[in-house]
Image (cartoon, rainbow, N blue to C red; front, side):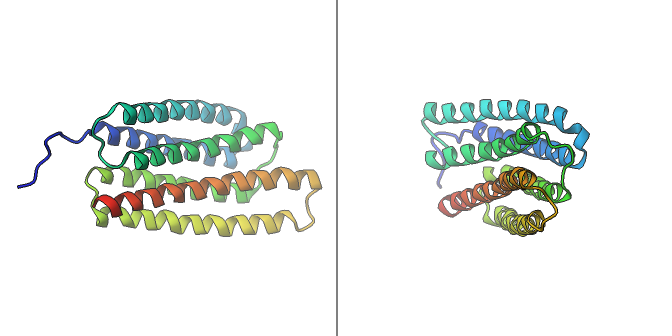
Length: 207
């Protein structure tokens, strides 16, 4: 009968689940910020604090990898997953930071549509993280597929938003600002997909 001489360190999974929880909270803040322009200053501060907390968590994960003799799966996969989760948070925080920097007074409706896609993706990440403890393909892959599907939705929303932006209604400075804002948000959807792809790779190697 096969058995482990050294038990698997479950605290890695605790940290990944905490990271996903923070992403869900941050995405909720982003949705609120894009839905209510008057909340932008306070929500930008909230996201800045969440991003700082996420950085500390990422640092803890990386340090834990360096200190641990046995890890639940490959060290490079743990590092990739930790940094990609942190990248999602960074991009959400960068978005609200740009809103303040650009002195945005009125948020365009397409921005909240993309923010809601990010929120849905982070909710899927929150659901899938506990499944890493068991690495059962059937309980993990549907979440990854849904995250990838949502990324495609984000791509379509970005194309529509860009088309609207360049239809002649907006002055050049507004176009420049919103092009960067939309692209930051779409990068967040891409990075959620990167997390899903990393999780798929972990499953293929270990399940």
